[in-house]
Length: 265
Image (cartoon, rainbow, N blue to C red; front, side, top):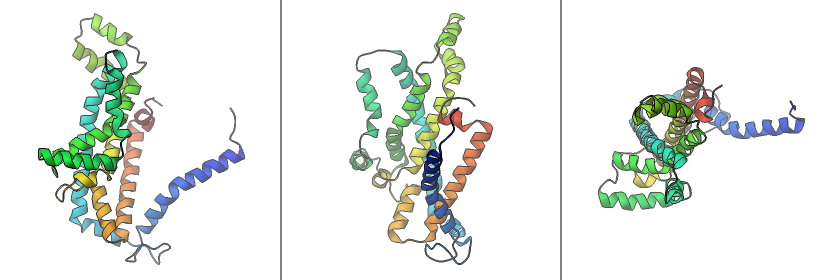
């Protein structure tokens, strides 16, 4: 096994510093006792974390983003699984065009999608509704769910499925008892990545959200445009802490490599 050279170690250290430094700074600023963003600070305080609990708009936006991400990711994966099975195992007319259609949101700027969705949702009466947000988020996260599910199905050994079918199992039983357990890492990875993408989406959501359906990223963006105080830093630090806890729990009980890579430890 080749060891890392000193140059490679320096590069890795600089890369990690570049990636983690902004997160560390945000977490430190969140504990400032001052009324403005300042680092270094005179002392540490939980003032701005208490301010989050005193602001119901951020709490409501957080729960809305959670529900939106859960609903959007679940619908996207439910569509991605049968679509991936069709793309991976069947040759049919228009296959490439349909796949390109599913992946097209990756190639269109989200600001363009936002303007288009604003016009479309207004015409059908869904503007500002939760269903309108779910509809738009499913479209933009579909490519992520499709790619991960498709990667878990491509090259999958079908001998177990054939054996189950030969023993009299129906197509639904074969899928539920044989196919789905084998592709569950890709399905779980697609769901997690879709949920994160939906939860973080702001560019497109600015156009389709209303005062009653404002997501957390949009609420944070609106707050920044009005004032710059450590409240946003404390909110960002809270999201970082929650993410770290969720990642530790997933890694402990399931394994992040199974979710993000699709392979066991």
